[in-house]
Image (tube, rainbow, N blue to C red; front, side):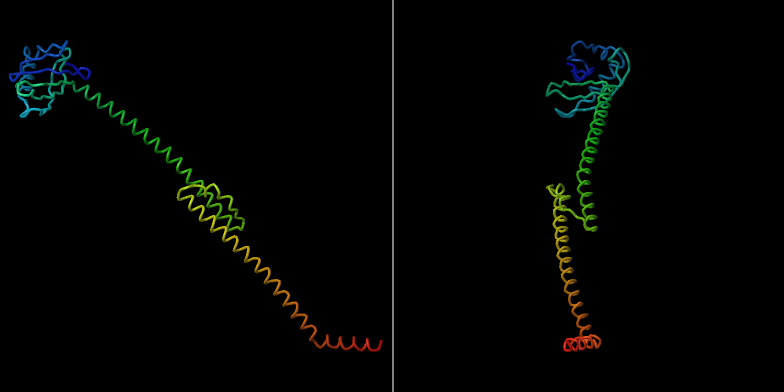
Length: 225
């Protein structure tokens, strides 16, 4: 039985003897070498206390070309047979998988960050533009040149910015209309005031002594004629 690249499974009895050997894998070193016997004894001594429990530990082994390297072992019992199922994986492969996962996580995190930045940029533009339109409209209102049509695009939005634009456009239009009516009233009042002023000034002239004397002389001249 083989898995995960150079990893494999085998079965030991309670004395540490190999019962089942993986295909194309020579495990005779577990009984013929000092390191193999020590490893077998360690594996047998790590027998789980209950069925289904898995005991994990690492040890040095020479399964690949007689080279000493760290291996990761998982030991579990096989029902009531008193046999031990052992999985062996080179620690270097586990580290390689871990590094690959770490690189993959970094790439994924970078991609997520990039997507987030793009979304943030698009969202900021989508918000900044109508806000700029509102600012320009406020300046135009202050300078008495407000045009409600400049807020049509922002007011067409269905979010909070759109609601703000619609409220501002309505308020500004009401202000413009009130100012127009006020100017009309002021113009009418000025006409009334000017007319009253003229009438008052005319009255002052006609009631003056000089005007009265002129009027008397004019009447005398008409009688003489």
